[in-house]
Length: 181
Image (cartoon, rainbow, N blue to C red):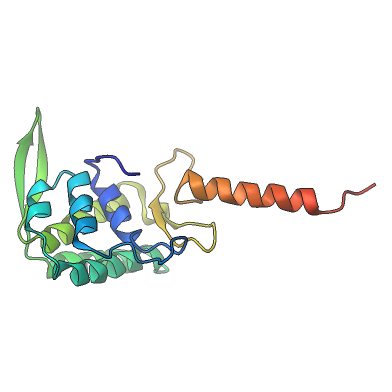
């Protein structure tokens, strides 16, 4: 379902979306292997090997703290929440060479690395594109989040699956409604 990504915003969004109302049960972060796969998909093999069962509860708490940045009513509060996550993390930044460029990497306990990486990436998204790009899927009951990177700032759904589901429902409604003469 997911491919490897070096995009830290995608890591933050994927973590928040481990609670998905369209799934039964909605909790997707049910075992340590899910958290390990999340780390591996985002290039954090070291953290995937270090994460332990006890880290699941902390990852769920982090997920809710990150989600709050998508749910608040203004940019200042979102920034405050994300800065709070950073302040609580003990991970330290380090610049490292990746191929021919430099990349900022956080070092520390797996959850601290996850918190720092996710919060920093969302703060950078706010700085670069604005908090208005943060969204919650419009395809109820889905509650997944996204960061809109479209040119025209028109994204309304977390995925093509949700967009298609809404389009199909609208099509079925139109077909059922009586046509005017």
